[in-house]
Length: 346
Image 1 (cartoon, rainbow, N blue to C red):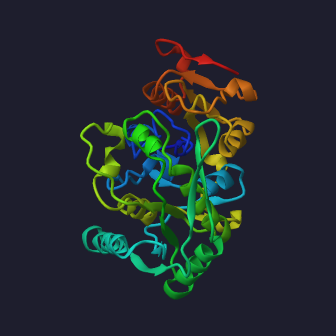
Image 2: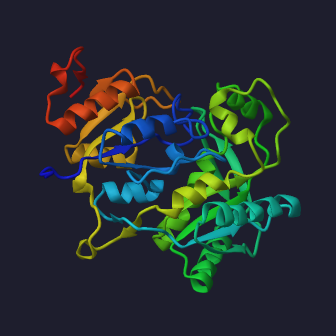
């Protein structure tokens, strides 16, 4: 008989900051898989789990969009487990006919091969007009010229197909070739990630539905020197498969505790890059006294360590050490007495 409640951890790797782990196409999936084998429930977000054409579904891993993750950490929303989501896809009318057909075929393949419940798709009534930008620190972000068109398309999906989760495919412009080449060589920041987050945040905030984004891009020329961390994005014409799989069993969002669901109180520990501790979710969980584990090896373009914010944190060198701390914490063991001692920044 199991008497302990389920042990829940959150794995947070902010998008678009050039993280050494999690800054590429699904390269944090090995970390998530290993972590999920230790905890009972791992709550994380699409930046960790999306691997373009590749994915790894797990019943122990919850796929939660970044805005919703912040709302969950703040105690404003709860997460409601589901057996399956009824998916809809928004396709940007700015996508060229051949590239649009590739994405329609990806939808059909996900239905026929994976059996996903994709109720339908719609075209936006105007091209979304995504632009890409870079901050002085090198992080990526972007803008959308026609946000109302995106919201009308999602409303159309809800009305026509009664969808409960939404994938968005927007036509992205060709990024700066130098930035793209650096990314492909494992030396730069994902030039698309910041703009992708804006699209999904907009939908989740407006409709309180799980959402994730897959960019539509012109195919890149073959390059035998691409860094292995970026190669998942080299395998096809679309990044949609991992998004559809992630959304297919993503938890729903609830705003009233009387409805049930899992709330922020259930989180036992949070694992975050040691240089990127300033996000809303981490700040909320730190204020609640959660165990914050800061991973030093996951360097990024950010320079926001826990000590600078007054956050008590356990600093570890690697994700392997972080997994060990989680295992000890779950077992009720003081990890400082397990071999080489971690040090507490708080």
